[in-house]
Amino acid sequence: MEIITDFYLFMLSVVAISLSGVMSPGPLFAVTIAKASGDRKAGPLISLGHGVVEFPLMFLIYFGLNWVFTLTAVQKTISLVGGFVMMYMGFQMLRTRKESVEQSSMLRHGPLVSAILATGANPYFILWWATIGAALVTNAALFGLVGFLIFAVTHWSCDLLWNTLVSITVFKSKRFWTHKVRSIIFSFCFLTLTGFGAWFIVSTVL
Image (cartoon, rainbow, N blue to C red; front, side, top):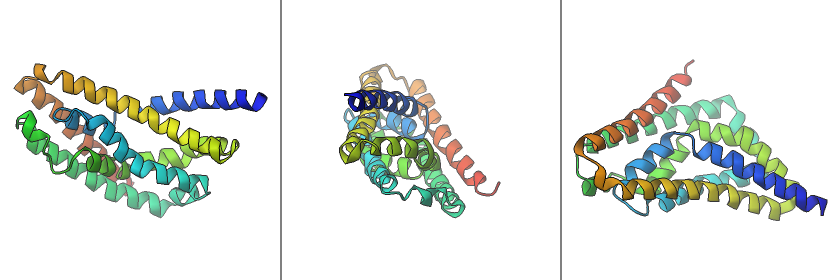
């Protein structure tokens, strides 16, 4: 009975920590806003793309390979490559900020691929899993493989819930988007992505 109580308490902490992470503004949030302006299903697709990167990473940590992501060479490589990918995505959004909603939904990549790129190119995402995430996985492993799987699905479900909520809100409100509002929102997405990208690149030489 005690172990069940401990597991419930642990899962409550997982939900709280997961939501605090996914609700923080960042590259994936910017991509969600941009894609949701023209696609009602952007949220679930973005969550799926995020999971394509996240689930294998969780399993790598579960099997004890999180030390790879603490290596300086690995971190610098991820930061450099990720920075350029972020800036590329940002400039793609800048190019489409003056287009119609219908055109903007046809960006170079769809929600699924964009989420994979935004997730995989984010060094902070990798670092979070190598530290905070690794601690959560370690605690989840104390409850066996089933406990770890429940943890993994619960964490991803928090991403799914938030991204879906954001995308629905953006899609439902798009009729209120004037040309000026649309330009401001896409400029925000551009600044967010290129700002993170520039920081990632600069951090490799500091």
